[in-house]
Length: 295
Length: 342
Image 1: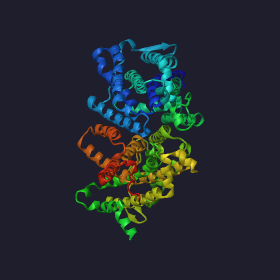
Image 2: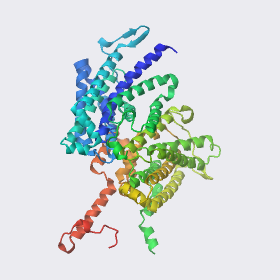
Image 3: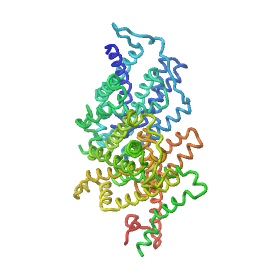
Image 4: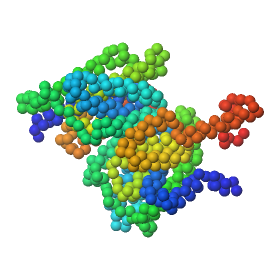
């Protein structure tokens, strides 16, 4: 087998993993602090891609790159304020169903607004073409995107592990009652975390838009990988999520060489193995979820 | 005498009569397939409610066992009983496979509670979906298994859709009675105690994990049976029936009717659910928008479901009646709840 093919697939896997990780972080944080399985998170990702597709011809590539995630952030704020905040801490099925309904309605809304056909965003001029590393040829655009995504993810990780805000969020996952008692505004904190996740999902959508075809089902398609990454990495742990995201991205990408048809199932097998030996995921700690199941 | 009046008061009797007469109504007779599906769905929702309503476990994977039943029935029928056309073995296999899957899966997750339980059930459903979707040699992959021809059940020819309807009706009603017997049994009462306070039930000496595991398995058996019946209704098995959206539908149907508070909730819910879906999808292209929005509305405004509303209203009437007694108000807490004798 050609080593170049393997390397190219490896890089593809990294890019895929980075995009999925960005979605997974928001999913994981909301799950940790709000105990809501947010099925509508994929919808935010899809909207990110659609908004980017819609506004980038009008205002140019870079402005659209910055503005679309902000629009998604506002959307996330509105969704959290009107709907999600009502199901925090309730029966998990309520949160699950409300976000599930939301994602169905949202996908239909996309179809109503922009039609059923798949859309494509062309690669911007400055990033067109290939880069040559010796004998390996790789798309310039993917490398630029990978670097941007990596910078964003690392800064989020640093922010959440070093800043005061990150510490409060982490404390909120352990004991939400206690941080309220210490004088922190829990609803506002949950809102901030949700909006942060939404912005990240929007960025992921923007990054994915030129790589994948944009369609209304892309939200539900990315949800399951994000879900798996969040579970395998450990709920609420940014480090674990990035780690798991990269592993799963590379695994699904390289898996094509070994078992072409069953690559989708590899992450699930990994999930079962991880949950069997390390029920909290790679870097998961005892969070509020652990407290519920008495660990 | 007491027994007789009890039977006459039973809502089942009237439901059975209604469904028996259903195909003979001139208007409803045309929609026999949908009514059959409705019956199957009501049993499916009822089986799901054994888990949700009686143990409070937030399972989001009931669709997995339903789908497993669909495939089990289709595969058994194609490979083992295509010649004789007997549907007994496929249906038996469907419920067995549903039961075995839930038994094995339940062993892994019986100790998990709350959101973690929900997450694992979603993951399990998705594993089965991917297998069914990709394993072309056995499951037919994306196209599924199609072109089955409904055969006979120990000599009774069921190829006619009206006959199949009565066959389904019989199975569904027998299952109803069995499920109700389970919920009324001491084990069912234990489950309700477990739902209210698991720790207390444990201190009373009940092995709550085992109870959860067994009721989960029983619900899997019925879900598998529903899958088998559904497979023969449309003469096909698709990977779609394993998708996690299916599990969302059944949870919705159960909650809509009020499965958390009333035994008949799932029946009411799935009836409304199927009828609304059929009507909506035939009159509006973008019906999914309303469909998704209805989930949000139900969770926000009627989380206890329709029968929950009825129950609340009854309670209110009850309290009002006592308040007006002798013209003075009393504390609602000391009013005996309905059904309690003095």
